[in-house]
Image (tube, rainbow, N blue to C red; front, side, top):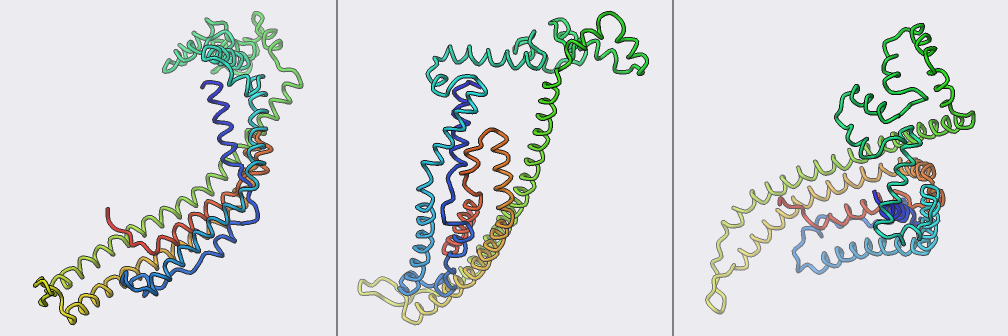
Length: 361
């Protein structure tokens, strides 16, 4: 990956996660969400002014909630950007020894050369300094024996021993290994390659941090798995409701079509008589009432399930802060936006959808 791209990705991720919460909480947003319109209003014809006014007011309240939540968070945007910039600068400097500006001002050739230099340093730190990246990539798909031979041929050692020496001891007894290590200068090479007490301590710390990070990632995954299961259930039930809505359409369509207009308009066009129009309207209203009853009940069920996600929000936010801090994004972790705001937005979207019957595509 090019260095500048690494910088861009780091900064973008930090900025995305770092919009401060402000005073509007996800719980408050959900709690202020307006009640859904009644079935009688949802199923009313478009010329019903009272129903139209109620539905318009419903959507205005939801839009106002969205706008107020956004305005509440806006004052923290500058601080969030500063935190993301600070973290990105520190991480990049620790990783590369250069500033973000220095990396961005490099030419394409300089970026490629610098990237290769960093790769070489990483290989050296892993005991693979005698091999190039191309040589390592060429080992992909090779057998263990071929890999060991290639590494040995390139002078690679692990703990002072060649891969072939390590492989030779795999099936030895303890006594055989002791005798084997006494041969030649193997023991001296291993002792010379042994880490210093400080290096060993650093390695232990890194291992503990890696395990902690793995635990954090696993717990976050368990939470997101629960949330995804809720989304899958909502989607499955929605598709079931969509099919039932289509079945209702199919059941009423012949009844509505059976009422033939027998009246004549001024221009001699055929039109419904008053009684025929009433019959058609009654059928349409009955159809729409059935459909909106189904759909409103489904939206209500979705609301309840989405709200249950809030129980995991505080823990998920804490895990996210831990993960970001472990990755060096300490300032950003303090200004990050709660995942609860995404859940609140999902709740508002689900609620607003009650006025639109879902249809089979």
